[in-house]
Image (cartoon, rainbow over all chains, first blue to last red; front, side, top):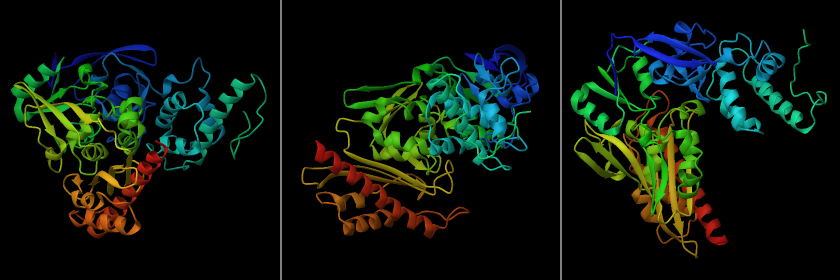
Length: 184
Length: 294
């Protein structure tokens, strides 16, 4: 049994993007605020704060959840992945590359949440159809670009994964994106 | 939008949780998945003094079948119920209803029992479980009791669970798995609260006559409604277009929806009739198809 009074600080430990954090928090602190204010990981965006917009989505033990809909203290001992944890050694995650290529973002406010949902989605769906991708995106609000580019970006990653499995090292035979950006 | 301060309590088992409820009375609030409670707390629509966090209690996370019953622990995540092969086999109505709840990101955390005790009249889990004639096991410091879902819902967001009690388990009778089933709902966009939702389980005999049916409607009253009158019309009959119209009219005749910002009373009544017909027809066709191949 654990009891933390409202004015007490709780010594909270959790793993975020593979790094151990130990911070003192009030019981009422939301996970989203903990990540931004205590861990300094401001890539997780806070939009509506009541579970509608999806901007604050992170992975908690591998599952995509709204970080504004849980208290930080409830994630004690959990492994969290935020958008900062996607790129490895300066190399963007395949989804990040595809989002850039397909113009899947404009202002970028909704993007971190969408990326995190897409990561879980692609781990559980090897060959998703457009409808399934749209269903996954229904938990996110984007007010700039609309969703076409985002759907295309996710499809591009699926396509590349399949290509990689079929023949390693062949060129980009089919272009999924309707809009492409030259590499810079 | 930050929650008001509260004392946080995390019991290590159900017994401790019951003791805490006894101790803190109406000032104590249980939190499970929190996908309905957190928005309420964030907006300070509710400011409990004591938050009792049961989300980590592993003993209430399970899905298993035992004889003629499918038992689901109250704290099982909605996503786990949605993806369970056992549930798909024994209670496919639930597998069909679960994806309508919120979004994948909220079902990852929201619990099966949490949705039931929250008792939103538009919610998918209460509606499906009522159609499946399920019961629940409720626990307090004094012991456990069983309640049939027919007697469980009192009014908006209010159930038969008394202060000091916790939902432990949902029991679904699966001795004779219904041959036909259907869950459908209408909302403005995916993940919104349903304007109207409907669920149906149905059995037929070798002559395609209906031998048993349970039809439920949500979003049309303060609680999920069992449309018994409609069911009575169907028993012993083959489903024809005329009978379907008659039964769906009967189903919507006894409901009393309120008009609000999202839909007028008249529109909800119309939807109730349309969706009652949709689920009855789909459930019937599935039952007949299954009967034909058996």
